[in-house]
Image (cartoon, rainbow, N blue to C red):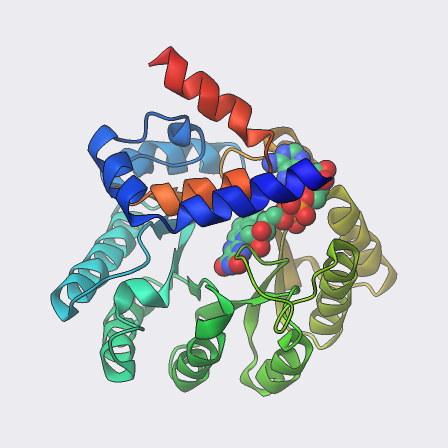
Length: 307
Ligand SMILES: Cc1cc2nc3c(=O)[nH]c(=O)nc-3n(C[C@H](O)[C@H](O)[C@H](O)COP(=O)(O)OP(=O)(O)OC[C@H]3O[C@@H](n4cnc5c(N)ncnc54)[C@H](O)[C@@H]3O)c2cc1C
C-alpha cells in the first residue's frame, strides 16, 4: 500500500517533468507507450480505429499534448483536431474526438480557447461528430466548465468530464443538469491536495457510484469511464433496476487497458468506447497511466528492452 502510494506520487511528479518530456520526444514512443498510444499521427491511428470498430468498439481519439505556450501553438493544435475530425469523416470511422482545453490556449486567454473551440465544433457539427472536453487538474476545472456551458447550447454534440475525487463535483453535476449534458464520469487522474479532493480511495469510488446514479436518473447521457469491475457491475445493476435505455449510457476504457473486459462487455450487448490517444506528446499521458497502475510498468520495462 505504502509502495503503491510512493510510486503513484513518483510517476505523477515525473508526468510534469519538462526535461524528461523533451527527452521522451527525442526517443519516440518506444518505452512501451505504443501499447497504449495509437501512434504519433492521425494517419497512424486510423488503422487502429478501423480494427477497434471491426471488433464492435466505438472510439474517441485524442490528440495528445496539454500545455501550449503561444497563440500560434494553440491554433496549430486546433487545426490538428480539425484534421482528425475530417479523417474520421472521410474514412467513415465510428469515432468521436476528445481534447484538452489547455492545448487550445486555456492558460493564454478565455477568448482564444473559445474561438478555437468554435472552429472545432463547427467542423464536428458538419459531420455530426461529438467532441468531449477532457477534465484536467482542479485549478482548471471552473474555467473548463464555463467554456462547456457557453458552447453547449449552440453545439449540442459537446461533452465534458466530471471527476469523483473533487469535493465540488456533486454541485457541478447539479449545475450542469439544465444543459442536457453529455458527461463522462471518472475518478480523476491528477495529483490533487486534500483541500479540493477526497484523499481516501473508498470515498472517491463511492462518490463515482453516487454521480453515476444521479446523472443516469436525471436522464442525462452518461459515459462510465472506469476499468474497475466494481464500478462496471454497479452500473450494470443500476441500469437494469431502473430500466435505463441502452442509448442513454456507455462504458469507456483506455486503449490497451482491460482488452478482455472491453470485448466481454461488447459481447454482452453494451456500448463500449475506447479512448485512443495519439501524437508526439505522449509522455505526460503515459506517466499518468503508470501512476494509476504500477502493473503497467511491466510492459513499459519490456518495451525498453525489446526495442
Ligand atoms: C475513457 C477514459 C477517459 C478518461 N478521462 C479522464 C479525464 O478527462 N480526466 C481525468 O482526470 N481522468 C480521466 N480518466 C482517468 C480516470 O480519472 C482514472 O484515473 C482512471 O480511469 C483509473 O481509475 P479506474 O476507475 O479505471 O480504476 P482504479 O481505481 O485505478 O482501479 C480500480 C481497480 O480496477 C482494476 N483496474 C484498473 N485499471 C486496470 C487495468 N489497466 N488492468 C486491469 N485492471 C485494472 C483493478 O482491479 C483496480 O484495483 C479517464 C479514464 C478513462 C477510462
